[in-house]
Length: 153
Image 1 (cartoon, rainbow, N blue to C red):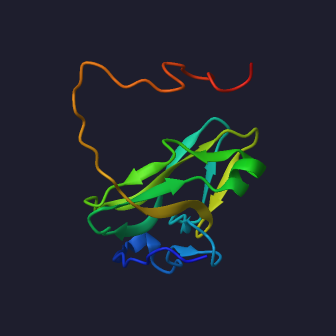
Image 2: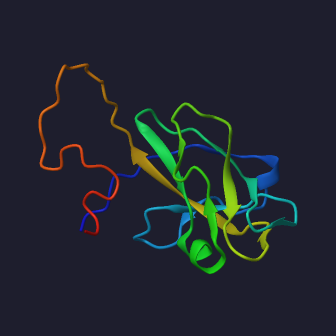
């Protein structure tokens, strides 16, 4: 199976990210790069709590691309840690520090440590759409069926 296209994304390390590994792919087949917590020491997130956590980097995506920030499945399964607004979108024209909103849906406080992998970032091409007003839409097999329409009977 062929690999996808490789693009170059300039990255600038911020002071809080000094000394941390740059985001990278854990395996040859990984779609997402691991993002690390650029914090001093440790940060505890209480059950039901949320925290904005810096990754210590800024990126310059080329036009026509976005970066999607997604939860890490192991943190979600073992600790109930997820991202609010997931997937988060980093637009090609955003130049601020990449940060993630970690949320603790678990039953115990969760301690984030400096350099810990807290999320993953997937760089993907973007297709823009032009909406065209019409009087009627064409019919489809599903029609107007809403939430759960194709699920359990």
